[in-house]
Image 1 (spheres, one colour):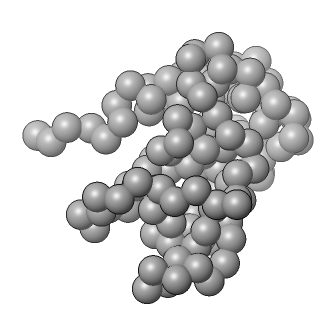
Image 2 (image 1 turned 60 degrees about the vertical axis):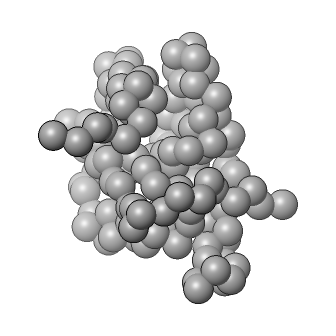
Image 3 (image 1 turned 120 degrees about the horizontal axis):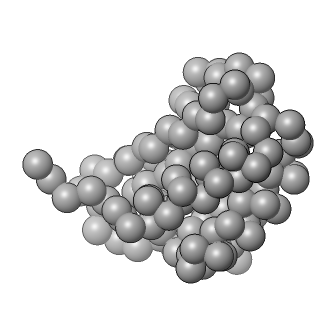
Length: 135
């Protein structure tokens, strides 16, 4: 069996999400959840950037910008939602954002349903470059 990509960080991200879920459930808007999650990430020793602008590339040329809720340790995208139902389109869109960037791992987390939903996505076509920094 292969090695889990960013195992320690993934464990901390999931733990932070479950802690916020345990405290809030699906009771609050996305902005409240985002602030609580930022605090929880920091308490777990993760470095975060909120609302970082990420270039979307097509054939190595910038064609757009994506602004995820968090970039963790400059290597993992975390997008949060607070929706009553899980929508397949959100998962599809998230996959495309990950694919269009140089990030290899992302989490799509929905705090709005009766049960916390965490989707861990990997997009890796043998990429070796690190994420490009956007201005």
